Amino acid sequence: QKEVEQDPGPLSVPEGAIVSLNCTYSNSAFQYFMWYRQYSRKGPELLMYTYSSGNKEDGRFTAQVDKSSKYISLFIRDSQPSDSATYLCAMSDHTGTASKLTFGTGTRLQVML
Amino acid sequence: DAGITQSPRHKVTETGTPVTLRCHQTENHRYMYWYRQDPGHGLRLIHYSYGVKDTDKGEVSDGYSVSRSKTEDFLLTLESATSSQTSVYFCAITTINPGQTYEQYFGPGTRLTVT
Image (tube, rainbow over all chains, first blue to last red; front, top):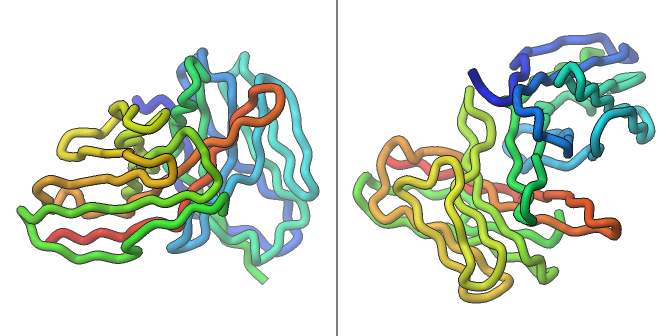
């Protein structure tokens, strides 16, 4: 079993829909959680960064962490065709200072006109 | 893009040949990383560096070596390339924020094909 599980999709939604992207993890030491967006043939782009449990909002994006369930989510409101990309979750136990990340395999999102 | 460039951006090489990929950063970041990305596996850490001449292995380091002789450059070498090393390679850096939180940023990637 992988340390971080993420449904690969593709997830297809109509424009304007609310999108929910999720990851589960098994390592209870993880305490930093990140979401990256990756367009085709590009590098991952950091979207959201949260520490420990709770919610964090940035514009149309909300990141949610539930450490008791080992479950993190990214919500996208009013989805746009430009949101079509692969979304990667990543997490770190932040032991030491090297910040090594463990990634999910990514969920491909398609927002249809 | 956190001032990260990678070269070359694309390379095709033959099995058994040595290959060196370069990551260059302009913002004096201490921590640098090399990842590979493959379908079904996501991003996996190959090696990382926490300073000049200070490096350590990641999850998938077999067949790879690294060097960092200057803060701005982190080199990844495949001593004898194999077809299993066909992949997209990403360099990353970590920024340390006030309050000691960390954010990791990625370069544009190098697409390597070993024939």
